[in-house]
Length: 316
Image (tube, rainbow, N blue to C red):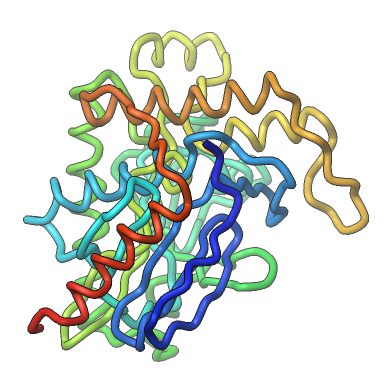
């Protein structure tokens, strides 16, 4: 079953909104119901086709890491009534995405390739190649943008501008780096390299929480560890187990999401390959077999309604 969108009906005060790949339900200003659909986006474009099982992988993998890394950082997850659905605390999100980079790839590589030796205020050494490990993981924050692309920002600019108070930023920075170090070790034990990862945080009742998703293929970049060094020495590209694989396929078609460009139709072969890559990564990281959800939307809504009702009625 591919989940394109939902339209849940609740006997509560609910505000429904839709992101690029998620449907969101704000329940009485207390909880958020996040539905990870199988929609897919790249270069800020949502494609008309779905990637089967993608939403389930993202939602379930996030829940897996939230629970396993709970001793590192408080998280917003309260319940997962369905593999595609998370019911979470309604935190006030910080206007910054925290990207931790252990390798020089993606946006950071493109800047470096173009001659920049400083990214978000962090100095980088000369002589690095694409995908090379950095001397140590670095924090490269970006501003969140609902329209267009996020923008790089330095840590000093974050606190000096008042975007985030200095003490809260210090806590966020510590959480992001600790999550990345833990994620790196987790991936290493399973034959993977966690090259970089994006984290988002929110604030509720004087507490910082990690929110959104963590260590999923849409929020992190993984390389297979086997053969990594030889591929680097031979100047070969590293296999991508992340959303970057789709971006590379689109770039090969000449699509960059520029204004006026026609949105390409994803081939059945590419859709299947993307789905299998999401599933493979889920199984590698969780040490478990992926089992696709089979419930109808009506059955999903019933499970969600029961959990929402319970959480609203439980004492805080």
